[in-house]
Image (cartoon, rainbow, N blue to C red; front, side, top):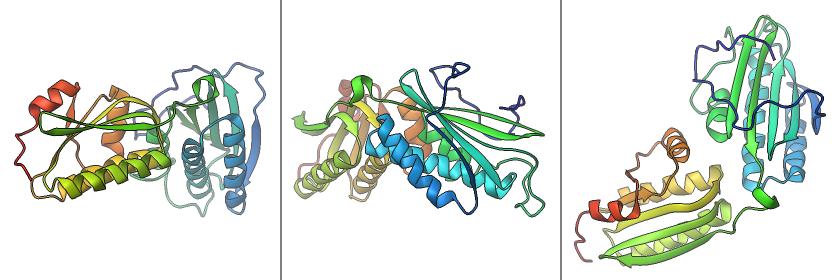
Length: 271
């Protein structure tokens, strides 16, 4: 990596698991250019799954690295290199170009930071990110945590009433199957209560992927579409809360504890 961290854009975060030890061989080392991005996606998916990432997080990794590689093609030297190391219960993934931008590259002194693309996706979908940029090129390293004991806790959803309010307690991995189960539970709730008072308790959520985040956003949007529905979200870590806020176009109302959320909800109107 080059030495200067000066992208003039996002705050840079660093993976919690430290740097990759010198001499550690990568599990993937592949060059790419504009003609090989599609093939790169297939390779990334295979290696992420083989390393132990569950399907949803493997998809997040593929999206992230593809966007970074596209940045290297469009705004960098036109080609680059992807390397992945498996170290300290995580995948450390580095995307870099080499040399100054091509003369026909889209005008940008460095890789741009735009909502929904490239560096923005890398920052909010990964578990850590570091960036360096200088005369010799740009390099971005992202970290994706691997499951503890080679698996994530199975998802479960428990519904219970509390003081005329409904609490949906989620446990385990918030991924595509979990998203489907949450969607079904919310549809059932709305069929029973046109103006629901809902608390989503995420205290037991052990991991998430982009599909799980989308399910939370959809839930909030469905509650917002009702005439007087209200939803609180509780039990999030500070990191999870920041990512949810950043990734969601829909504002959420958060509470630190389940008891506090229930206390803050307005009285039920019946129905």
